[in-house]
Structures are given as C-alpha cells and as structure tokens.
Length: 560
Image 1 (cartoon, helix red, strand yellow):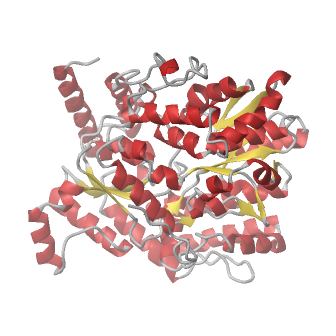
Image 2: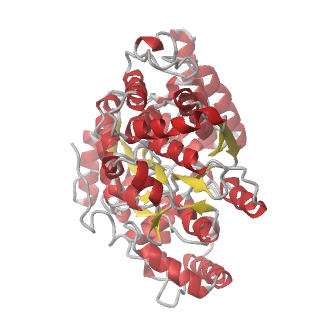
Image 3: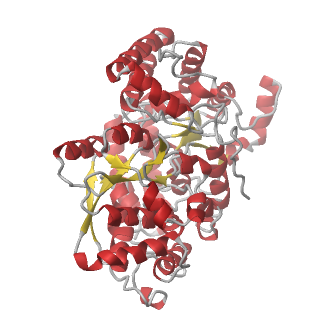
C-alpha cells in the first residue's frame, strides 16, 4: 500500500501524463500503456474482501469458496441477504424457488456451461454467483469466456454443429430476433410461469421487462441496464464567474444543457473559458470502440429521425440525419483534444483526472467517479478519481439517452440441462442476487431493477449513490433502445464508418447517403419482407423511438 507521499507523487505523475498526451507530446498508445501501468500501481488489492467470518451470518450454507465482502459493509449486508433469500426464503421468492427446484439435479453431477464476455464480465460468475450457485445446489458451473463478437457467432456455430456446448448464453438484446429466428435460443415462458414469482418479474423497470419480448414470447431474463446518462462537474456548473460570463454572452442562465444544440454551446463555452485545464466535454468517437453508433442513433431519434420508411428504405439522409451530424461535429470541436480518437476507457481517464466538465457514458461511470470501483484490484486500468465529491448526474440533452447494448441471459437450444440452466438464469437475476451483482466494485453489470434503485445498501456505497440510482431510473423512462432486429451489427457498423468518415472531413450529407445505401443493401440481403416484419416487431418495443418511450406509453416509474 502506498504511503501519503507516494500517493501524491502518483497522482501528480498521472496528471502530467494526461497533460502530455493532450498536448500531443506522446502517442495515445504510449499514454494508455503508461496509464495502465501507473493505475495498476495505485490499487489497494483486496480492500474490503474476505470470506472470514462468513459462517457467522450464513451458518446454513458453506460459503467459504465464495468471494465475500466484510458483512458489516453495505455490500456484505446485501450478500448476506442474497444467501438468506436463496437458502431460507421468503419461500415465494424467485431465488428460493429456483434453488429448491434445482435440488432435483444435485445428484446428477451436471455442469452448466455459461458464456460471458472475456475479462471483467467473467469475474463475477467466477468469484461470486458461480461458486454460490454450486454451493447452494450442487450443480457445477463452467464460465466460457468469449470475445464480444464471438458471443454472437459462437452460439450460432455450436447450434449448427448440434454440439450442446452451451447452456446459458450472455447476449445483447439486439441479437434476440436473429437468434430466435435461427432456433439458437429458446423461449422461457413456460418456465417463467412455473417457477418465477410474478412480483419479481414486475420488479424490472418497465424498459427492461419488455426488452426480451419478441413475437409474443420471452427469450431470456434481462441482466444489465446499460443506460447512458450525463455526468457533469458540479463545481464547474456552480462557478459564479462562469455564470456571469455565460449570462453576459448568451443572455440566459448558465446551466445543464437541455437540448443537443445547448450541449455543444455550453461545452464550447467551458472550453473557451477554462482550457487547457478543463474542456467542455469528451466522447468516445474512435472507430470500433464502440460508441459512434450509439451516440448517433440516440441523437438522431431525439431529433425526430426514423430508420426506415414503409418500404424499408433507409431514412438517414434526412434533415434529422444532417442535423445530428452537424451537432456532433460541433460537440467534437468543443471537446478535449484527441476527442475523435477516444474510446470509453480513455474518456474515463480524462474525466477522472478532472480534464472535462461533461461526459455521457455507461453506468460504471458513476461508480468509478466516486472511487468505489477502484477499491478492487481488477479495475487497475482505471485511475483514481480526482472529482469524487464533485460529480452530478442528469438525463441526456434531448431526454432520449441510448440503452446501449446491455445483456440478456438466454437459454441455449440444444442444452442437455435445459431446466437446470433456466433455474440458474432465474436465480442469478432474482432481486437479491441482481442487487449484489450490480454492487460488486469490479462489476460491469448495471442496475435494472426497481428494488435496486431503492436499495438502502446500494445507496450507502458512496455519498451521492442515491442521486445516481434515481437518475438511472429517470433515464430509463425516456430511453431509446438499440435496433432490436436482424442485421443490427451491419446497420451499426455502417453508422460507425459514416461517423468516422465525417470526423475525417467528409461532407455529412454525402456520408449519410453512403450509409443509407449500405443499410438498403443489408436489408435486401436479409430479405425486404423479412426485415419489414422484424421492423414492425421493433416498433412495438417501448424505446424504439422518442415518441414511443416508457414515459410516452404511460409506464414511467419515478422514485425518490
């Protein structure tokens, strides 16, 4: 562990590295390499994690192989409650019912093969839910780590080979139609009716409850609320000098932007006033990072854009498309140097070092901004936050932030352990387990349940955690979702290429025309009639467009 002097020297050195990169004195690759090395030295390994004393609060279950927090901490309390809910009840709870039903498989010596994205995503089942499930049920588990693209392609290949290699799949909601149509995943409605407590199903925020539905069936349990939100520096927006200067220049109060035009105007103003110490914003614009597709599609729909016409012709080359790209160009100009080459991790690095006033990103931003995530050595590539007590949370300008990616636990067709696999899915996503898994410092699983938003344990993780959770709920009320239909990957890649070309100087309208042509080609390749039917399914999902959000259909949930 570093002493106080070493800690000051580390932070000073890291700040110098960021400044050098922003000036262009070092390459981005060199900067990130140094950043990761320095970040690794900064962690406090194992802080707060111990299995010692666990039997004192869970004597009925041997949890010695499960990675547990100190039971006196909020995380430890939540873990104790999850063990109790699984082993003692309430008996009507989905966690308890899944564990009890799984006892039938205890003597059969089966192993569930669970796919997860390689890296941090796979740590949770390895350290917590996998060992706990095995302890509770006697059912073995095997975590199959896959690179993100392989999470889609490998299950298809194994299904074609009829190998039975996987039991539970971690998939994006946008993949459901293609995998369902191809017979790669199974509907779970009968199992839900038989085993799940309806109250636990209703505990999902309405956005996430409906996102797994396709052709009238449920194709998995939602498991990761990847909702974009706006994170901002409260000290910057409360600065009296900035308030006066903004009022004098624009004739209106200085505050959080409500529209995308205001966003670029406010970001440019902050950059003009405070750079090079602080820039107005930072975005992940690097090709393939990903980011461009999510940023464009959320803003395009906030501007009234629609993806296709009645004949399934792409509608990108419209006023909404041109306006969106013009706004994004203005955002880039108002942002930190190197903005167009940032990925999410590099954006986080600049944000945590206090170099920018606003970012929008996935929910882990709230945890790393508060230094909660950095308690675990697994997050050694993220620097300590210098702005922990200065961060505020808001919905995105325009109101329609993307629910970007996320994960669904799906039942693999061809599984040799179909019912046991479903029972694991129900258990691991049940309210007490979901709460713990979204509280783990190293987790990349994000809140999606109403009970999590209201959890006193989660709200105690850092001083502003309550505001963070309330804001995630509000963002979900007006969220737009990824294009949940076959061809999503190809449509998204076209947007990524289009944006990258525009950042390189291509005329926005010309770039939109090329992307539209690519979309039309994808649609024709997949079959116009089939895509038209899939699009009609997509239009039924709350969040398909800005005029069809959870709020617009009257299902919004507001918490305090």
